Structures are given as C-alpha cells and as structure tokens.
Length: 324
Length: 255
Image 1 (cartoon, each protein chain N blue to C red):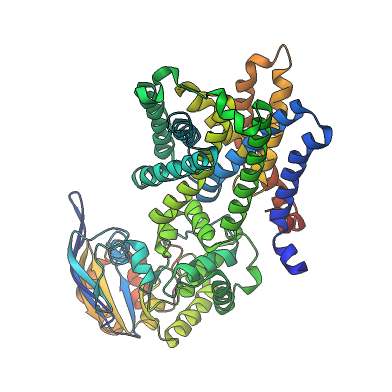
Image 2: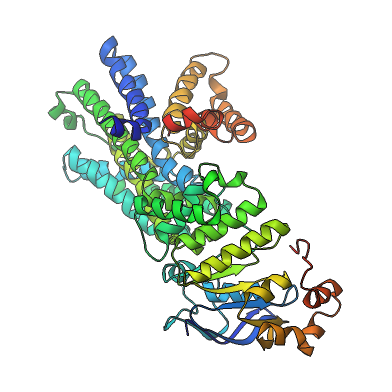
C-alpha cells in the first residue's frame, strides 16, 4: 500500500489540487465561484491534453483548439438536430475529435518542427471556414441550444451544476491518462521521440504510430469538453469554436506550469486563469490581456523553458521524486 | 551469412556516395570498415539500417530482405547501431535511455524487464554509477558508452558500430576495446567503422576498405594494410598512412 502510494505520489498531488478547486465552490456555496473554478478546470483539462502531444512527444500543436471546436459542433448538432442526450453527445464529441486526429495525424505528423505547427494552424483555420459554409451547421451564424434541452437538469441552474461536475470528472480523467501515459512504455517511446526522433527510430520506436496515438489521446478530451462547454454556452459559431487565441493560451498554460510534467499544466492553467481574472477586472489592463499572455510566453521560453514544475524538479532531487 | 550486402548503390543527386558495394558477414565475426573521410562508410551503414533506402541493390539480414525497410523495422529484427555523432536522449536519465533500447529492441520487453536488462547492460559498459544522471550531462566517453549500452540492450544479433572510439583518450580506447571483445564473446556479430587503425587492425577478423564509395580492398588486416590501392587511397593524408604502418599511434579526434 505504502509502496503504491509512493509510486503514484506524482498522480495524487495534481488530483488533490483539482479536488481542492472542485470543492471550493461547494464550500463557499457561491455560484460565481463555481463559474470561476469552471474556467480554471476547463483550462487544466485542455492544457493536460495538449501536454501529451506538446510535452511528451515534443510536437507543437498551435491549432489544438480545433478539437474543442469539432467536439462542440458534433455534440450540438446531434443534440439540437437529432435529439441525442448529452451523454451520447459527449461520447460522440470525443470520438469524432479522436477520429479526425487519427486521420489528420497520419498526414501532418510527418512534418517536423515549425512545419507541423503551421499545419495545425492551417487545419484550425480551414475548419473555421468550413463550418461557416455548411448550412446544416448554421453557417456563419452557428447553432443555438434550445432551452428545453436544459429541462432534464431542472432548468439552467441544474444544467450548470451538471456541466461543472462533468468537467471535474473529465479533468480527473485526463490527469490520470497523462500520468499513466508518462509512466508507460508507450510514454517512454514518446519522450524518446521528443528528444531525438531519428535516434528513437534507430532504437526501434515506431515513431509514426506512436505520434499518431499521442495526437489522438490529446484530442479526445478536448472534443468531449467542447460538447459540454458549448452546451452550457447555449450557442456555437465558427469564430468561437475555433478561436486561435485560445489555442495560443493553451500553449502558455503548459509552458508556464512545466512542459512534459503531469502537475505542470495544472499549475500553469490555474495560475494563468487567476492572473487573467485580475487583469480583466483592472480598468487599465483589461485590454492588454492577450499581450500579457504573449509577454509571459516569451519570458518563459527565454528564462525558464522548463516551466515552474520543471524548474522545481531541476533544483531538488527530492522534489523530482514527488513532482511528476 | 548473417548479413549479405549485394551490389548496393546510393546516389544523392549527382553524387554517388556508395558505388556498387557487396559485402558478406559470417555470424560471430568482427568486420572492420575503413576508408578516408567522405568515402561513404556511414552512408553504407545508413543503407543497411534503413535510415534511407539504397538507390539499388539488396541487403539481406538473417535471410530477410531489409533494403528499403524502415529504421525501426530493422532495429526490431535485431540489428542495432551506434551513431558516429552521439545522439543521447538528453532530458531522459541514462537508465531511461537504455530502457528505450531494451523495450523497443529485438525482444520487445515490457518496462520492468527492460529496466532489468538496462541495469545489466549499464553494469557491463561501466556506466552503473551514472544511471540516474541525465544523459545530456555525460562527457563524450560516457556518451559513447551510452550509445553502446542502448544498442546492446536491444539484445541484437548484430551490432553496427560507427566510430565508437573517436574522441576517446588512450585509456578510454583500451577500455572500449575490451568491451567490444566481450560483446563478441557474447556471440554478437559486429560491423565497425573505425579511424583508429591499430584498434581496427587488432580487433577485426576481416577488413573492407571504401574509397569514393567503391570497395577497393577486402581481406585479412595484415593483407589490407599492405595493399597498394589502400595506401594510395590514403595518400594526401600522411597521418593516417603513418598509423597504418605504425600500430602504436593513436589518432586525435577525427570528427
């Protein structure tokens, strides 16, 4: 038992942080706190997903938000047009995102470095243009969620509760996935690819297959989150679903907390979202919020490329055993 | 024959880096591959290990055609290699580097068994005291040993060594030679590219010489050292000529 706890301590720490964030609105009993924590959890789950590709595999996906948007569109379509319930819609969102990642990965993961990053931006912009031109998806106006869909939850209030706890569950799930992957043979192969893809292949790592599965894994949770987010939002449109700025923020979350670590995306997303709230509520700073994100990214890359958790790990051998 | 290279040619645009080379290796032997810089030695290695396909010709490893196969396919069949310019996985520990070799090599081990093999191999190459260090922090000699350890952890049938002695000092060279001999004792066939003449002459059962991509000589070490064409190929590089004739000299880092 102790041995098990010792081996998995790197998992329990981020899970405890998430539990704390989830419990905070319960304890305070405040709806506005719940909404604030919702945005943090969403960020943590998105960042942790991206980390599997960006942190473990070393492939920079600049347009990763595309899977969030794809999930949102798929989910809202089947709910509003075909009348599916939310559970199946979330499953479908995850599946469609994973499937598209698989097909896309087979094609664009051949590209390395900046070329791959550019391709992911291209895919995101293409999806935005595409959804804006499909009438069945509402074209540029998008789709609305009929308020009657909130009835099974006892109205909008109950729906907000439901979505919040669903996002908590998904956040826990993605943290478990990212811990298990990191500790697995598959994860070791991904890290070998990150360090030197050619050397990894020379050692027998089937890089094309491993990369594709990393991409799929990093896409499914954002797909599921997209369904929940836009269901709660009540509306989806191309500009909102495929917002490139959010994609860049995702990278900042991962880099700030610690690229390639399980805890890093949790810390990075949490800190960033809290800082952002301060900026947004400040009369002078609210308009330069994104500029701050950019400056932050620049500072991290220049001064602490390993991020907060990575920096802590490099400072102290004991921390290295505890922080994954 | 464990490896048969048959009329392999590799062209890069107008440059013929490897020109119609045929070589055969018997199981358990050490074959030395020498030649001046730019002779196409590493290119031949890359054609064998699947880094790129040969323009023409065939490579048969343990009865199977591998020319044009991917590097990971060849690696998993039990043909491991080291790199001339070391390629450690810098942000992983020494142990993790070797576990990659063990887990993705011929035996396709799980993490736990891979770790066991890694510890054995690290002991064997003399890196046991460095296992938890990050690979990027090792010095050149240690990185060379790490390259070797990763390749050995795959439990290969055959090992391709690309200048594992380059950049090592005299004591380190001696240590590495002992290690290579021990690997051969373990039944692994070895094809090695080497610039340090006395080493390659001492270790190899047979030597082949490449010059401008062509195979210009093949035979026992003593015979090759006396071969006119070999001496001619090294003309203009008096240091190396001196070494071919003077077995005690050790070359400075040629990379």
